Image 1 (cartoon, rainbow, N blue to C red):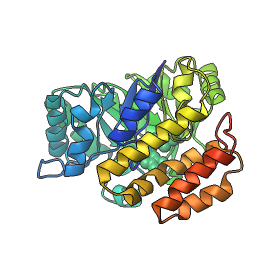
Image 2: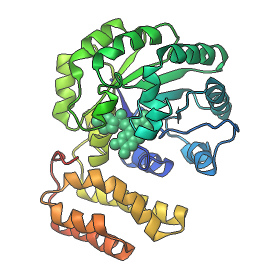
Image 3: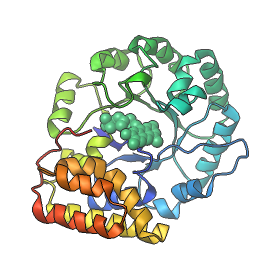
Image 4: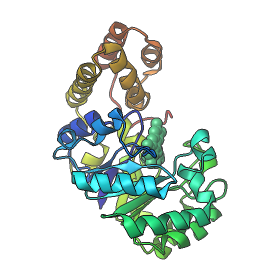
Length: 318
Ligand SMILES: Cc1cc2nc3c(=O)[nH]c(=O)nc-3n(C[C@H](O)[C@H](O)[C@H](O)COP(=O)(O)O)c2cc1C
């Protein structure tokens, strides 16, 4: 089984990926949060940092792009292959209203003919493997079958399917009913994504669908960074390891942003999930969420680790 770390914009930055890879080895691939190649064919300063080779040294990283302009995708993908990346991923799943209104992310799924022409041009002109991360559709999971027929006509390296439709955002239960058919009908290796949070979730998925060979975890992994490490035989999460990981990540952001306040804001995004791994954490998490002063943030993290029990698995909190 291959285990992937999902891209989460605002959380799985290069700092996170590097440290996670060191503290909790076992993830076979980390996908970057999406980059948005523009018509000017230059990566923004932030994007340049994200993909800089030295910053991703020794970590298996797949950069992700989101655009509906073939020309811009081809430029960016080839630039990434020139930098040494082995694969580039296309985002066809982002559910954000503004993204979808522009026909990008999950919005592209509703423009099938245009998507076909986009993929045709891309696969003629890219110089390396391209994978896709997709949702099932916009409103109805049945929308996926013609989309899958379209994917099947191209040499896609791998198809990661987040088993939700756009209107589900991240809330509604995953729509796993179609998984067996997707596995049977896809010409490409399929990676399952959606709501893998506990060891039991992995076991249940493997039991019900032994043909699944690739899985991607997002929020569950943010709540319990040892989740994948454990699937590969690692031991239970130790409090001191978690503390060391989070402290080092925070200090890394402090240096990088030259601002403890901005580092705190970044860490709060992770704590939204991380907090679910602590028992009776509501009160302290509320203080942490509302903190505008980094001293309050640091003090609250200290109290969380000093006062609260670590749960064996995250409680559903998102
Ligand atoms: C805060 C947040 C940011 C995300 N950013 C991205 C992104 O940049 N690219 C992408 O393909 N998916 C993104 N996703 C979706 C996740 O990669 C993943 O598909 C989704 O969370 C479902 O998997 P999970 O249930 O394991 O979390 C994001 C999700 C969240 C919650």
